Image (cartoon, rainbow, N blue to C red):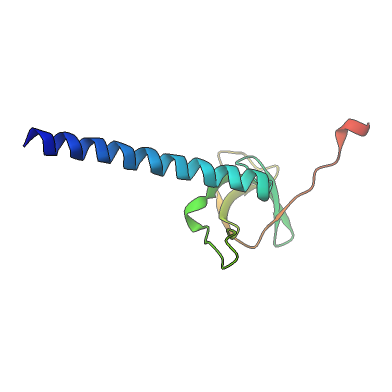
Amino acid sequence: MYYADDLENILLRKIQKAEQDLLQLKLDYCRFVFGLSHRSRVRCADSVYRVTTVDVDTMEQREDGRFSTPVVHGVPLGADLRSTPVSLGRDWELESTPDTRSA
């Protein structure tokens, strides 16, 4: 009986580790493919928001193997970061920031 319990615990730890690794891979995908992180600025419905969360669980794998954009939540740019975040859905565009290196 102890063997079965130990085996179950080992498998549960491996599953949890794999889920954590998958979450990190999806966050890396968002960062490198979409340029998106939890502090990015995005434009949605003619307003600019600072991203507070990226919901990688909403990413769907398309037929070509790529992932769809995730649902993001954010607060309006300039608002207090403690404001209640608004769901921006998937219909957002990354806000381009001016290049400060050329100044």
